[in-house]
Length: 107
Length: 95
Image 1 (tube, helix red, strand yellow):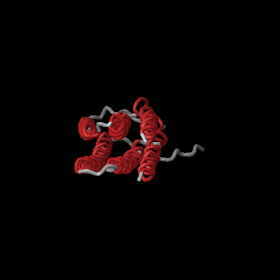
Image 2 (cartoon, one colour):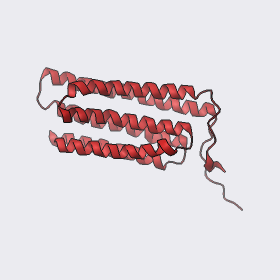
Image 3 (cartoon, one colour):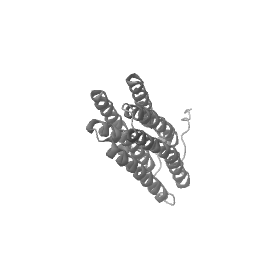
């Protein structure tokens, strides 16, 4: 079971790495929201799932309730993270930020 | 297993520095908001890892849940604040 926990944690770390690199490298405010919204949600899902699995190592009613509570965090993040991303996009659209286009060739 | 948890938490802290770059040098205010949101979502996982390191996971899971809630409220309130505001200056690469 430990190898599954390690694999899930490394998988989540990989997704967080993709999100961080995307936030740095993307050219535009709107395209930066794509890694910020998706990668963080999936990374939290994988890492918290691994930690909840590790918590069930010594099975009892208390540890089962704790794991259910950890999945409550995942459920809340799945509701909240797209809402926050949509709200940031809405603020950008209303403030009139222009989106990125390819630079025109001179001459 | 504790050593592995510690190294994963250190790796998450390193990734936080990448998001902190966008928070410090972002061209617009909303870019900084994206960086703060990314840092907060990493902090939730780090709080759970700290709970396993201290063997007080029953306490730290509540703290992580409250932190996720506060992060959501902060981003929502800040982005609602910038709705009506025209003061977001233009980006510099649009010339």
